[in-house]
Length: 296
Length: 287
Image 1 (cartoon, one colour):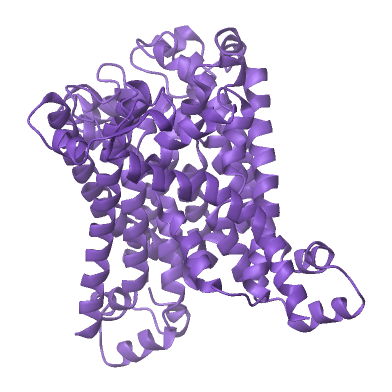
Image 2: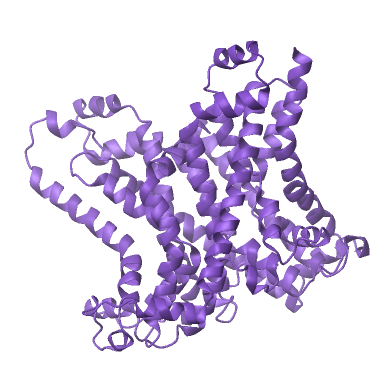
């Protein structure tokens, strides 16, 4: 009997494990291997030649390759930090608006917020590059109504990256709001009743009940937001192509340009490995921080 | 914040706080909906209306001319068909592979099970760019580049689907499966005839997720197609419209294209949003 199910397990697992093995795990290992090779993406893997740490030296070096990579790393770090800083508080605030029962319309609000998450980035790019248009864009017209002068948005190196962050926050905040609502539903209502009997006001209830009990949800949201943020590609590819003056050149866009368009597979792979390592370090640090707080 | 409290406790100053909350909620909803509403309204304007100063927000004489013009710039029919093929076949593949693997992880005991599961789940958190370069070469070397198959085949299985299916299939009673085994049913038959119907909502959620995700997917198709415009999904063909985005005269055209790209996923979402939301909540809480 057991033998039969062992064979069945093999049959059931083969399709998924084979596909994920060939198309995700194998390329993952190849990326690590290629990061130590000199290799053109146009040639077979067998033409790669071992160069030790040369690729890593070059991407952190003083040449233009190094400058571009370090710029992209910095841009991605700023992009990620801004996204998380904006998305987490907004998702909790919106989650509270949806979850409260004092004013009707919470579910409708959730639908509106989440619907933007379904929109393909090409549509977002087409609409927002128009909304952001310095001369005839509706955003500047509305800012004009409240007495704020026209903003350059995507056309200035100082504001382009932030403009891309805002567009992505607009699109993704609904997803994180749904996660926040999931966290809120896990908090027992009796805690609030008890706090109210003790005379806690709304702010104190939020500070001492909601926020601490949302910590696991917020940790999960932060991890997902970080992973999403390092993947940002489409708005940059579609709207700014990394510019102006490299101000929106983020890692995913840069790695693809180096590794696919310029066919410098070794260099691109070394950059991808650094992206992966940075991501692991940040996520581990986040978990360590959360665990230490748990012990307090 | 305080569920149901307002109905039980006497309200001293109900109107002020509620009015503020309602106003805030309305503001958030308007800000969130504005870009899409503006997009649809602009797509219905005539070029003359688009250029009017001060701007007209709502078109006086709504027209569908812009939609006709889009098909002069982009091969809408062909691209929509490509997107439909890519999203449907990928979704079908993901459903089958996820149900099978999810069933194995939920209901079988085999060596190194938790190790294998952790390894698969880890791929869920891997940014696609990390594997993009070798994957591009790999798919090219098996002759699938520049084709729809090249877009589809690498995506026929994913960790999220396996994870979701395992979560839900774990909840199916063992007795149900054992009874079918007594009757001599094969394992595959049990999975598709007995287990699948009892986790139908989860399957629907996964199907919708996969469909919308692969309808919208951009990075991999762009990379693997190498400029083969015949195989472009709609989200890539429409990027031609970006070059029409200078000046106001073509705003209607551009927004009509954007609206076309949004419609299929948005319609699916509106019809079936319960499944979407439930499966996100499910994956967050149970995970």
